[in-house]
Image (cartoon, rainbow, N blue to C red; front, side):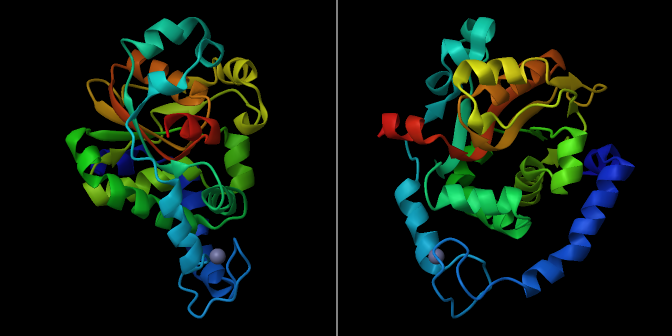
Length: 259
Ligand SMILES: [Zn+2]
């Protein structure tokens, strides 16, 4: 954890500080109705009602997933053979990217409900604890946001998930090991080959944070696998080995295919 503290930049500290100050305010204005289904809530310790939380059960992914199950030649391009053989790794997800998990992630990511992201991350940890322990990783690498997106959103959702996992397993987070140097479009609106072009060359390795480390890559959602595959490629260049990836959701199409 010490090196994680060191690796936080001044600007990131400032952003986190603002988020900390706003948290109690956000909690005060949590609606008495569920954010997802609009039903009245008797206790609003969470912005989501118990029924919606229970629906997450139906979206659970118990089958084992690997990067090679998700990647297609369109989403990994010339990197395909390498990514699906030598650089393949397991992916652990809370569920399929469908309602109500989809809306929960949107509220977390786009509407400032960071605490909801923490609750979802805790649920993921509860379900996948033993699998994650078996990975024997010593660092977490969140998918970085471009500085302009970070300013707009106020926080990096992948870092929120990473921080929650870090606290549960006492693994350090390396948020500065890789930065996003290219402004990319939102991957969810693009086709597989557009995603590949969009993400290619987006990440830059900083220093030797990852040298000799066994890492878990973290993103909020994995759809075509193009982003996580590109992050893996850069982390490997930095001397890391990839233990696996963790995400709140994998795409709808993939979930249906594995059932
Ligand atoms: Zn609800």
